Image (tube, rainbow, N blue to C red; front, side):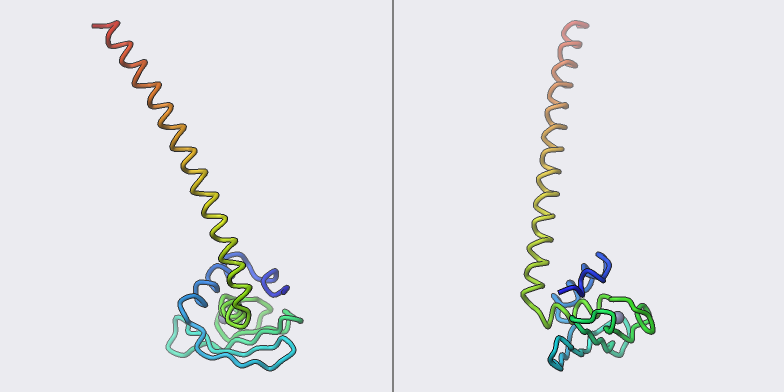
Amino acid sequence: MSLLTCASGNSIYRGYDYYNIGKVTMIEDFGGGQFKGFVDGSGNEPYEAFIDVNHPRKSHCNCPHANGKRIICKHQVALFFKAFPDEAEKYKAELEAYYDYEEKRREDEEKSIEKYLDKCSKSELCAQTKGG
Ligand SMILES: [Zn+2]
């Protein structure tokens, strides 16, 4: 599926979120990898998105961001995830792997800070006993 590779990381993230909270209210499968759907946006009217997974450049959406441009917006991404839930699961796993990595990195950072503080307080203690 090359549709996601045409979208920005931000659009994919927001699109996944839209899919996840159920903003895709209607989906129509035309076959051949073509889907049309309604995606709730910030306005009152839902946006109409169309995706062609075999020809991503034919995909479009009538939101202000993508209208008239060859941009894969978050609505198209949300529609894509709705059409291919497996891809959404894959993306979710990627996100979680990233968060796990970030968490581990932060933990390591905290540990090294703790170690540093440990050392600090000890030497400060030493200095105090010397001084006093
Ligand atoms: Zn859009």
